[in-house]
Length: 255
Image (cartoon, rainbow, N blue to C red; front, side, top):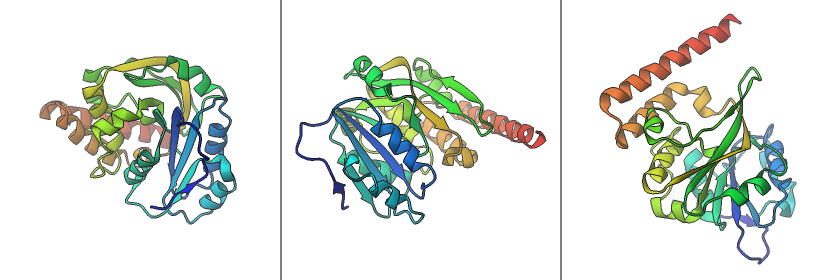
């Protein structure tokens, strides 16, 4: 793996923000701008590109030394790229920001950092924007029982000490869509959590789990069972999610 490292020899950063992207020319500039606008020192920004062919790499290189580290090469999917980002990160705390998402405001990290607990998996709030433009502020204290039924702690709201990732290992690339859900359950099985009531990201619907919810539901069922959800409970969760998805899809078709 060859990385374009633009960081001069300075003290190690406090926060490493990692964005993975492939053919995201229509959104990557907006994402990068939101990161570079953050009013904090000690910020490392890593972008891992999966050999894009739509001009994404030209946009990223246009930011020059403002991007700490940039890698562009073929990969084996989303979670392989995320693992590359983890291997490159030097910060004490890791945050994954999706290529089609942005920070809530220019002072998001400045507000959040004083609230972080170095001994906990920290998670905050997210403004979710659906395909119709409807906005919902999501976030709640962690519940293991609830998390085993469905994901309530998405990766873009998590700020995790890098040492915790080192202890539990990389994202499991046997999963194509839900390895981040597996990582949440793996981290929270070993470490305490801290909920911070601050909006940190704006997430737009349309990612792979939105495009293929049937795959996401099936992988999530397998993962939940791996961490203790019963066979019957797992199937009930799967069927309930599938029914809700079908109802929502039909309602959208009627509009």
